[in-house]
Amino acid sequence: MLRLKFILLLSLFPLLLFCQLKSKEKTRRTFYEDGAIKKMTRVKTLQSRNFLLYDTYKRTITIEHEFYNTGVMKAKTKNVFKIGPWGRPCYDVKYERTEFNEKGKRQCYEKELCDEEKHILKEYDDHGRLVKATKTIKKVKYR
Image 1 (cartoon, rainbow, N blue to C red):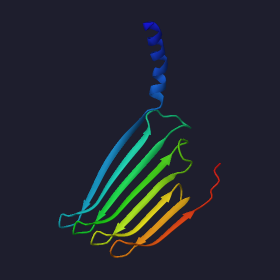
Image 2 (cartoon, one colour):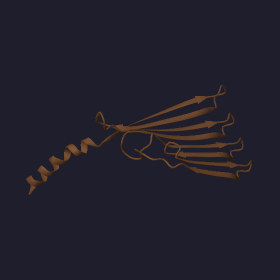
Image 3 (tube, rainbow, N blue to C red):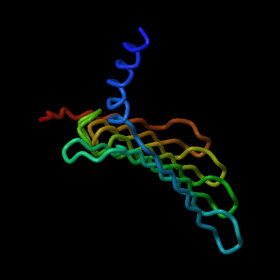
């Protein structure tokens, strides 16, 4: 019985090595001349641990925060790119951006999904209330 478990475990070991991902994360900050933070960018990359010529996978997530010189957030952006045959059949998976005024209230919100297949745009007044919202969906045929 122990020998059977060992053989089963040994036969599944290559499958566990095949589908692993490795990740890297980098953070970059830029500052105003007076020392206040201007922009903070975080880039996270996930990719296949083992290289295969036609079956590689790489996903890059970029999160960017921009600030006014008073320290209030100016804009927040999130980008997700993907290379590889797995998952959704698109390169630019998600783009999301929110802009704020100097008081910290939302001015604009924009979201695009799957190579601009779906686009959402929301605009706000000075008090942060929704003024206008548009949603566009394109019919896309994949290969």
